[in-house]
Length: 482
Ligand code: NAD
Image (cartoon, rainbow, N blue to C red; front, side, top):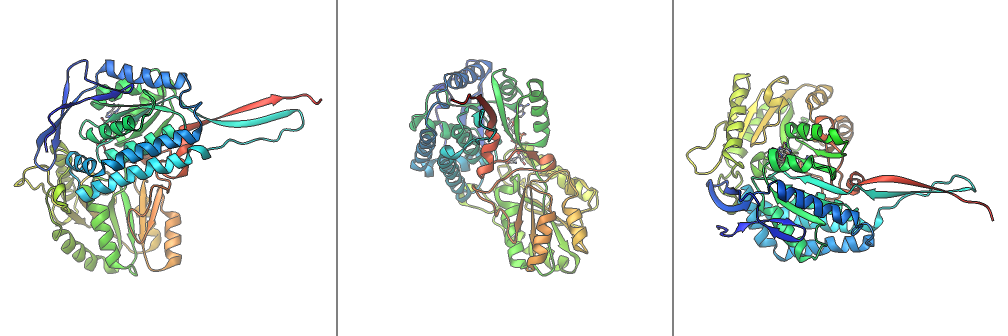
């Protein structure tokens, strides 16, 4: 599939070319060929997008709407996505490289977010605070204004939908800056917003590079809220910019999530969790299972089973629904390969994989398992964002929990055991925003998600997410007795 027209930015309800004439080429990661070209949003587009979102806010277009009607708009966006679900899944598969089956899942998840928050739009309530006979006092939960939403490339459709849905449900207007590597999914959402008849300017979707377009957006004086989903390094830089104008942020950053496997665990479930949690989308998942902490007595047989499973995975393009799909870019692949070289030099034992699959076209990397990964090594501590699993052994539950918590990250964690007491004891002590028991990716649209420690703050998903899109204001009224 090649898209011949230049794809434009969606600003103030219209499709706009770039005033600079600059273009961004979008590659198919399975063969490295450009299949789409997008207009790069320059300073003028950022200005227009923020101005239109700000006008919607200042004119109270969304705030004064009945919340039920804001919800209905989101239902209509969901319906528009559903109507073209197969085409959108194909686009998402092509730009991210992920398996078509998972791209279809991403479309369904995006639709679920829109419907879930559409349904919650009229359920966000304030409080009445008793203060005696002479005062009436209540709170209102008000939007911030223009929300700037910076989206990564690994789940561009569902991540755009999840923060867009929260923002609109709560009466914020927004400007989404899609990833330069996978901007087409955001454009599909913009099309759905257009079809759904959202007020012009309520949702703007632009594409550009982070350091230019992204930076111009977050430092714009009329942006009053930032939702950043991406790497820790970029997150730090976004926070620095936000601190200048005290702009509140939701930070959804990376992880180095560990699963603790006790000797009594169902090992079929563990192998299955690794197959999905570590290797789906070539391991490019923020809450991927990247460290496996295994009780020593079962470590050798389990590693053998993992090796057999991993070596049996089919490598190939997402459109063929292969297990190991490409990484997003050559740069990403080189970074993952470097991480594997460092792991070896720091003493980890290579069980399988470890190198780029350079004989193939596209950005493929072998599914990789390392054993004997030391706690102070780079592979144990730092996000790799590739198909690489680090296995470390432990001797007792306290050591297991300490190892699991021994990084600066805390996005997800898991425990595998048949013993309920042990599962609950461990789950309580795993210091992560989301904990899975006897499975991986056990969370859903309705379960709060987000980091502790340097994995970020604020929550997406679930009812809690809405709290990050409103600020409580208090109104006190003095009354006199008749
Ligand atoms: P990245 O940080 O490189 O880029 C993320 C986005 O930030 C992109 O749109 C990029 O253009 C933009 N950006 C870059 N520099 C910027 C700047 N100075 N100002 C404003 N915007 C800027 O991350 P990535 O490689 O696209 O995504 C992978 C990362 O995202 C991983 O670390 C992963 O764990 C994380 N992630 C987190 C979640 C979550 O919910 N916690 C979900 C998905 C991905």
